[in-house]
Length: 482
Ligand code: NAD
Image (tube, rainbow, N blue to C red; front, side, top):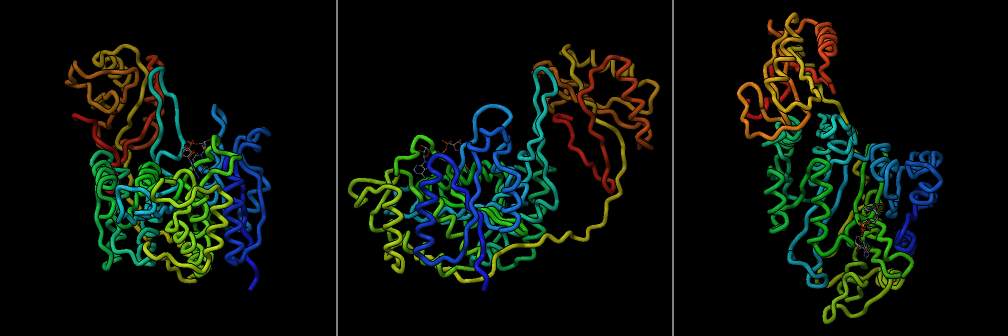
């Protein structure tokens, strides 16, 4: 069989040291691949490329499909784009998988029985990165949740759980507040979950779910969640398992996959042979499983577990009385390599098969298109006068000859007109809901006329958002207090 090629980036800070350590162990274990190396991160940013990656590297990534990446340093200050987000989105790596397991008593943790996997949506949510400054006082970041995005990640979570022999899939959302966006994620979880009758399913509101996870992580198995919650909670989960320095992650797409440690480039530890290479090593274990080299992955993972048990620890895990030897990055890798073939005695041993990778092809579901009816528009305006009655009078005067009426005005989502409360704090950013008098705006021409009238009345329109009914159901939320 042809030797697979993978792309490797050695990264910044502690990146080159932990990558060298990881590659040494992979080689010693007999992993089968050839390497193409690319430069990413600081060096490239300094050359003026704001994405932190050269165009030619994209070709390699797309060609090899498997990417083992060390952490990079994202320069502070404006203009630089996060390379991680760009790579994930450009290669369509929609599923971020982070197993978090404790290794008590060898690694200190309050949760000795923790063994959960966080599956985080990786491409959308607030990470669409669509932000605007709209007024002197107000900035906005758009939270985009799509049906295909939810279907892909939820399906992946269930398929992952089935294949890994897990028992339960939990969904975290905040759909008591974000009924439409997080509500869609929850709805898709229920829809797709119904196709997996042998797996237990549950949903938690993310705040109390996170509290429960931090307190009693052993009650969770696989947890699937939208991007931002997953970003935060997977770090919490890795940390309470023992250390962020121990966790690896995979980023899986339909065709490509990227494997990395979850920690950053730890610049203060760079060049001192101090860093713990375990996060990247365990990410490379996930990579081998993904490449169908499960038995080699198992050998490395068990040697790593045995090294932990033998008390050979880097500075971040070292504890007098528990650890036997404090070692540097290179020595830790040598210790793992010398235990290849050994198995842990106390910790649960790793067991992987040589199965083919879990790359799910998204299949668009055959749902009928909804009947979409335009019934009004939310107009967002900047207005420094904080009296909503004043704004309402100006708006009413502007629309007097149009088939629209002013239904309400909100400020930061709370209704302030009609009948607002004087106690409500108000900024210079107002949402004015105009709805059709006749129960439907026949065409967008009315909206064009509206814009003309508003500009003639010197109303400072920031943006508009059309109000639609989808099969007669409101495609927008009500104002708070409406
Ligand atoms: P960090 O994860 O680099 O460091 C946080 C703390 O953990 C530090 O005290 C560090 O010394 C320690 N630490 C991290 N990894 C360790 C390891 N393997 N062994 C021992 N100790 C370790 O986070 P940070 O300081 O917030 O970020 C530093 C840089 O890394 C920033 O430029 C950030 O943008 C970048 N970063 C990159 C990635 C990535 O490339 N995937 C992820 C997160 C942060």
